[in-house]
Image 1 (cartoon, each protein chain N blue to C red):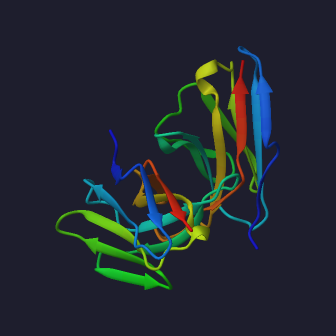
Image 2: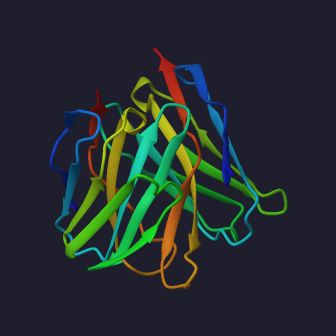
Image 3: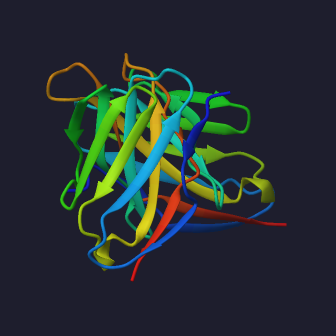
Length: 116
Length: 114
């Protein structure tokens, strides 16, 4: 059962465009929603994150929009650059069964290519 | 800077071999994780550990085991490697605490089982 559904699988935009990556979830126990960015040959790294009590969070050119009622969230990249070409993963965190710790559940990833 | 180091970048093993993937972190993090990454499937959690000698199964533990004898080191063991375990394996660590703790990843080990 896929707990975090991510789309599209791949995305190509021109420099300056605004790519949008969407994620949806079913589990209302999720309480933190990070996005990770992965460059080829590297491990993923935290890019930006949001809690469900906030509808939008912006850090530089990256914005998360969150719709709690629809259980959806999305990543927007303003004025995209070739250096933004990477794989992007949305994720969600929930407590483990004992409530003592948390694990990340990832979407399947979106390969973004920004052409010059 | 937090550093998560995986012992090998590339590994080629034969079917049936016992395989050890090692991961070390230098920031005194309580939590450590093993994920595998496959095209089109994203990152799937194999096992995680929140303390020395403690472990919990993730979403795909079958065919794997783990060992955490020291806080900084988390090993993934493939008891009898099979070709369907050919994948990129990623180790991560994070502080124990709230849901908003950041996970730091190593660079990955690309394992090929022939």
